Image 1 (cartoon, rainbow, N blue to C red):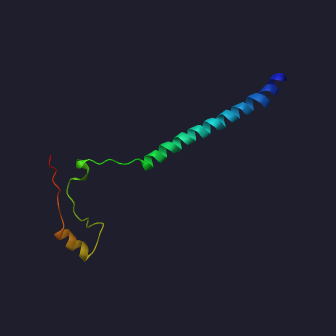
Image 2: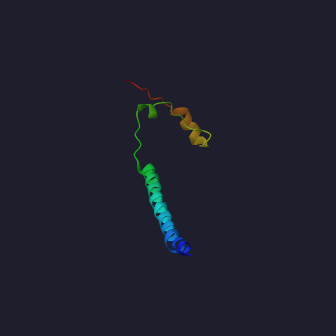
Image 3: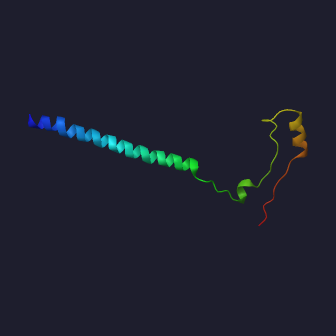
Length: 80
């Protein structure tokens, strides 16, 4: 009888409190990791923005797109 009372009034509430506390702690850690991913500054190096730049005619349609496609096309060159 005393064992049942111990389990009911002491052990179960402590277990529930422990689960809640660990849930809050792990949720905070997960939230901080996600927020860090959103707010971290992305560092670009030269190889990230050197290449060929051409108007995407599949995404942009119309006469103005055709004109830009025919007149504005460039390839930056990586020089050391």
